[in-house]
Image (cartoon, rainbow, N blue to C red; front, side, top):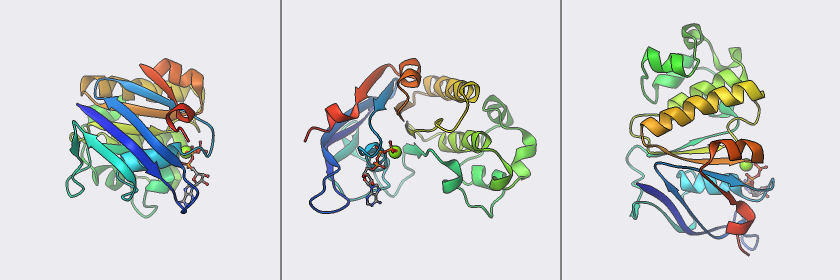
Amino acid sequence: MKLEGNNISFAYKKDSPILNNISISVPDDKVIGLIGDSGSGKSTLCKILSGYIPRYEGTVTIDNNPIDSKDYNPVQLIFQHPEKTMNPKWKMENILEESWVPSKELRDTFGISDGWLKRWPNELSGGELQRFSILRSLHPKTRFIIADEISTMLDTVTQVQIWDVLLNYAKKNNIGILAVSHDKSLLEVVSDEIFYFNELNKK
Ligand SMILES: Nc1ncnc2c1ncn2[C@@H]1O[C@H](COP(=O)(O)OP(=O)(O)OP(=O)(O)O)[C@@H](O)[C@H]1O
Ligand SMILES: [Mg+2]
């Protein structure tokens, strides 16, 4: 399987284009790294690929087919700030299980303690919350993960642990990953291939 963005152009405001005819391809057995300057449009591209921005020029396809917005989206976006995507009035187990119900074994693999399930989001650290948001995105129907700066706020040890379990899971389950980061050394470790945003985004 292959996720493709083809000739994507986008502007939040008319006359100030952010994305100019970008094409990018993510196979389901690879991690594609994407590096670029702050404000250049990486998160915008991530949102288009994962269906958060519905109107744009160009196409997003899986194996040349458009993605049906009525079904579960096989392209899941993981954000930099997990707390922004969680309802503060829900306990962690509801936040996780709203998407799917992973086994205890899988929760353990992702380093999620049983005790955290009964807590509110504001009772966990950023790294602890990010484990939930990653596991939540790995619903059995997920085929591609768009990882937008998912470990930027974590210390190096936690960053390595989280990427390690994510990469293992993705490899076992044929999930392709687009890994977006400012951190070139991280991308060199996790990616099979790295693209430079400015080179894709030709004006
Ligand atoms: N909802 C929005 N409305 C208008 N402009 C926006 C919106 N979101 C982002 N922008 C602008 O679009 C440009 C690209 O933003 P984007 O978040 O895609 O950049 P980025 O490459 O992800 O940056 P960073 O590396 O800092 O995360 C920026 O100039 C930003 O100010
Ligand atoms: Mg961004």
